[in-house]
Image 1 (cartoon, rainbow, N blue to C red):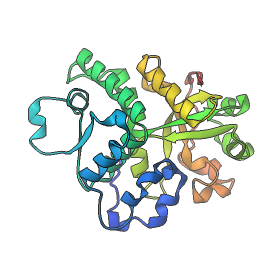
Image 2: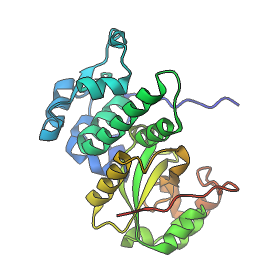
Image 3: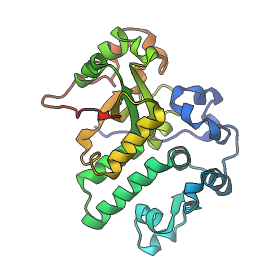
Length: 274
C-alpha cells in the first residue's frame, strides 16, 4: 500500500482558530504571519530574525532555481554563507523560519552537526546521525519529565496509563512539553484531525523551559545526542489532554492509530539530566 504524502492545505483553507492549538503556543510573536490572505515576505522574516543580535550573520533568502549551482548542500549554505534558502508562500518553509527565530541556538547546533556529517560522509551517503538530526529538526519536541512514574509509562509505550490514568500529570507539571520544535510537525497541525506524533528528546527536572532547551542544545553540540534515530522517543501529542478533540473519551487511547505498542527489543535512552 502506498503511503499518502502529506500535502498542506491552502492558506485560505486554514481556519484562524487552528492556531489556538497548544502546538503553536511558542510562536505567538509571529502569529500575525499565520492569519489572513497575505504571507510574510523575506524582509519581515529577516527583521524578526535579526531582532536577536546573535543572528545577524544569518538571513533568509528566497530560494531560486539557480541556487543549487553553487554546489553547496542546503546546510552548508547556511553554515558557510549564513543563507537560509526559503520558498515564498510555503507553509513548511514559513514554519522553519519561525523555528529559526524562536530557537536559534538549537537550530544552529543542528546545522553545525549536519555540516560535520556532510563533510565526513559526502553528499551521496547519509549517516545514522544525519537521519537523527533531520528527524528531530522536522518532527521534534523537547519534553520535561519530573516524575519517575510518568517516565516508566512512557518507556513502556503505555499510552492509556500516560495520558488517561495519569491525566493529572500533564496539568501539574510532572511531565510537560518544553518545545514543539519540528517545522514539519507544525505543518501537519494545520489539519486539526491529524494524530500528531513527535520525535522527542527528554530532559529530567530542569528549572524551566529555557534550561531544558539549552540542555538539548548542549548535548547535540557535544555529540552526546542525536547520533542515531533510535535515540528519539515517539510521543503521540494527540494524547495530551486538550491537544485533540477526541481524547476526552477513554476509548480514544485504546483505538487511535497513533498509539502503537512498544516493539520487541525497543528501549529508550535515559532522559538528559537538566
